[in-house]
Length: 417
Ligand code: HAM
Image (tube, protein in one colour):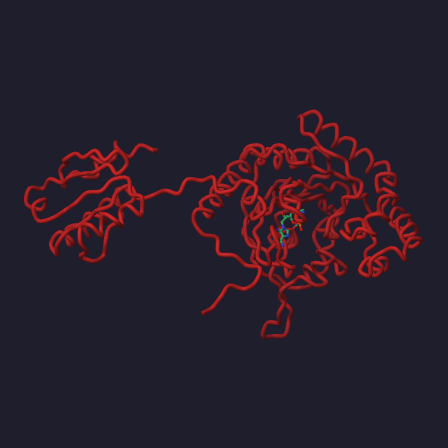
């Protein structure tokens, strides 16, 4: 027997109905904010991710599912959506249309991480990106949209953490201040972080090892090293969040696991998921479009993890049972029922029935297990008179109706529950 690959999941009913509803709500909300959908491919050239996300990130160093195509060129399953959307933005010359361009996508991502609660190797993101506006108004609007999404799901109390990571003008100074501090505490850092001193010292701020945590408490803060423009940008963002009543906490240790960020970075975190506490993460990446060969275009975005979101909301969407179960008894009734079922489905009614000539008892049991709202039984007598008994499976009431006009007679009874 085949078993699923470690770190992947089969999303089954009733969970899948909640996923669908979460996606529908996201689509509706994003539309209110002027976003349109994009469906980029699930695989790209490995180089795109390596350059975009950063060679020295965990994702690129050890988490990508990469393979060679028949020409020997390395392809990777996308570990995230941003790099692919930036590629699509440039390749399709979306920059030539009206800006800002607001895009979203929903789909699977792949990272070869150690599976645990809320962490999978195939997981799903609701991802949002805005291209073409450098101002903090877009940052605030984007964060507000994410916040509203969670509020509408009854998750308004999740903690929003924000930080500014500076820009190419001020980051080098911060980086060297941080490096100086961390190097002086080198011996207390874990093995990985000692290596990060050479490759990616900012990531050390995010290390979960307790001794590293202790070192990091007194590390210099990026906020103390922002240039004037970055400082103004961050203050304006905070003012705007205050103005629309979105609570946040400034966390100067918030660094993200991807290297493309500049200025605003943010996460929505919860205490309910253990170590995997981030449900949404994002930030500004003003240099990425240019890095990929496009015109200089500021951009910002975020992604929500579907699996983690579902862990928080649980199964909340109704599973829709069939409106009607047609129980047919005997070969000619079975034949009549085959046409009837098709006609009812064409008329928009959800119908189930048995494909085999089974006993009434077994068909009623089937209808029960499917939780059908109504059942009608067609036997020889019903075929002759053209009248059938319609049974309401909830209140057990029965009524006799015309077989011919069954769709019309059912319709008013099927008002949403
Ligand atoms: P990220 O922080 O790597 O950012 O991922 C965003 C969210 O995806 C996380 O907060 C988490 O909910 C979910 N997630 C990440 N990895 C896993 C996993 N292995 N299993 C389950 N859920 C996971 C990005 O991916 C950026 N591209 C976000 C972004 C968009 N920044 C700008 N635009």
